[in-house]
Length: 515
Image (tube, rainbow, N blue to C red; front, top):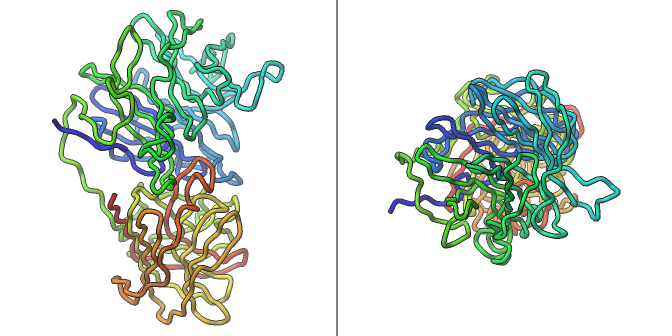
């Protein structure tokens, strides 16, 4: 029996939404304050995914300036209808709910069509010639009993005019009495029934997926007596997979049903990787969906779909910055300035401009990041940089949010060239270790073994000198830092509020994951 391993997208890839076009599958995820927004992936078999681009690649599509790390883009839904792709989402910082369209999934995608719809987590449901907006909103103050007392609602969407029209219909309030955050709705017409699938219980340990059905689009909807159809909350916070919820269904060309959904993998009790994308099979009993029949949970290793399985492609682990554009794995915090970086200033190098912005504010700093995707990993870079004053610094950053992060940077301390490991917890900085350095070029390595970080440096890429070992990484977890994102790592340069003409040159960046 051939198997695949969960997650199918490791690292900070939450809120997956999927659609099939013929024999091709496409998937998107939330990105919150990171830019470009909403990565889009392609697969032929639901197991092996290749990123083909991003949906939101222009500032005119997504304004993120001023938003906190867990603000920005929430819960996109991807759908295909009559030769066109639709991605609908919420920018909680700026314009609210909007959708964009494209003829091809890799783009280009249109300018946003903004909808005056309250709430978050929108989706589009197509039936015949009509389209409908489905979303989550708080109940009106006169009937709401607590924060997170939500309802799922539906309204017709005029795609020609980009407007919501007609009557609003409340479809469901969720399966559980007194539940928090019924949200993330998706609607499907299967046989005689309309099926409404949602997430309940928040984004943490109590997360779950529930379903209701009706023979009438506008209801009433009856909840599945077996709800929730999947959750891991009963397995405890130390189970290898937790925080299970927010899913989307897809029917293969061979008639199988599968669900993509989010979950987290704790290690040593903490979830640094954030919420990742998992895959589980779905069958039907008594016209209700059953997830992973006979088990009812996400398993780390599962039987592959009845789809063509090819050889898995090996991802490049080292970026030498020889191309004209950055690789698809790289992201910025919020909308980057045009002067943030250059691949042309020095051929074969990534040049990062030292700008006043830092990782502690809500502007866009000179920071280029990728997701941490493994529990044990090693990242290394070659840095050419000599600070000229005590405001200038450049190096490596590991970040959960503005108040929980760690910098491994070259800077100037009391007139001496210094390498520092600087931890920020709850917005307060402390220097964990430092040493003097001499050469203009320095090699930096960070290794994480579970929740312990090791910092190495050297005059060559072997990095034989240790600056500090056994640094606790758990402060970079969701449990301690809060929010909706996972740890991201990358290259950083800043003049910390001052003007500078300096650049930091990164010759390469390597990421090696082991588990």
